[in-house]
Length: 214
Image (cartoon, rainbow, N blue to C red):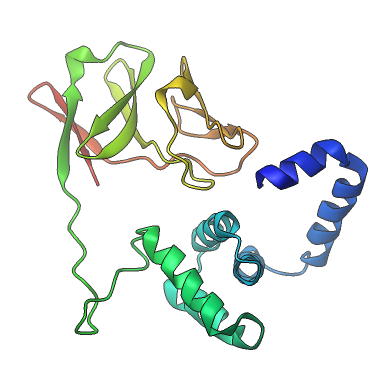
């Protein structure tokens, strides 16, 4: 939800509740993938970048492929026009999603780097039962340790890719400052406001060091 919509929900709760109820009822007979693809189109039509990012991720989570996203945009050409479609693709490519590899000048997809292991931190430096925010090779991470169990999360909120700062961490609860999505770092689950978990990275311990792969 955008800051403007959040404001309207507080300022005019009755009217906005009716609005959201209408949207839910209007899409009651659509499967989640189709509903989110349509939302992608409406956000492109309005040139709402945050909304595009949000509903694109939802569509992908519901099983939409990159080809289906592009087809949905092209099928909406009479309403969107080429300029809006090009704008949307620019936004999507800037998101660096694996489903949308960049294309080299030759027309062939640009090579996608293979996931690599990164040296994050010494295990001995991680306090048991606590979480910490770290930077590793240009990427923000939240790391949680409980005994011999470790969790390594991307610092980007799954809602609109906000880079969550260390000040948002209280114990093992992480709250994104933009729209107050809250996460339990023991599990990665979203426990307030939102409906998507944090992105978790594969990890391993070698030589007393915690390594993560992305």
